[in-house]
Amino acid sequence: MKILILDIETAPLLGFVWNPWEVTMAPGQMQTDYFILTWAAKWRGEDAIYSDALEPAESRKQDDKRIVKSLGKLIKGADMVLAHNLDRFDLKRINTRLLFHQLKPIPPVGQLDTLKMAKRSFGVTYNRLDYLGEFLGLGKKFKVEFDLWERCYFGEQKAFDEMLAYNVEDVRLLERVFEFILPYVKRMPRLVDPQYNEEEACTTCGSHNLMKRGFYRTNVSLFQRFECKDCGRYCKYRRSEKLKFATSPL
Image (cartoon, rainbow, N blue to C red; front, side, top):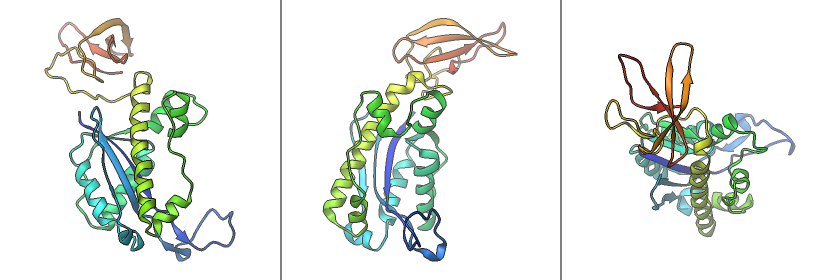
């Protein structure tokens, strides 16, 4: 399947608050809403990076229509989208900006959220992408300060160059983390479509280099369990006297 790995950076809200510890802001206190500053993406297994950023004049007008349109067009070619905190942040923000500009919606796509994967499958102390990358020895995010978002907000070109580099590195780190944790993650969807009805192939990488590893049982069914000798993932193959089905994810 075509998996698009992406990350977006958004501008902060601008508004008035009565004290620095206030955690809510009424609509009347907000001066400007969030908008997308930059995005970066790549197809899983390919080297090329795709990205877009606001022009300084666009940022000063909070006009992200051009780059939201280019990102939506890219997503339309994906079978699945992968991001860290995809469900609660990236996808909702993208959909909101498409709605705001009355652009064509993106189609339903499979969702792969590494934040949910980490929370569901592991007990790492922190589930932030930066911490996961360091914990696994895969690198860290670029160190930046809040003023980078402020400088972008007010339309500084150098800031956008720095933000785009930060955004691109996040995508590369995200892919490294995803590939590293993939064999260990529970309840993964199928990432490879079967070529024919009774194919015995890894549902993650498509390899036929499978080894039988016992059985997976439910209250009503018995499944042959396989270990992929290439990527390490497990999958199952349902067998009965009358029916056979292709391998499916565990």
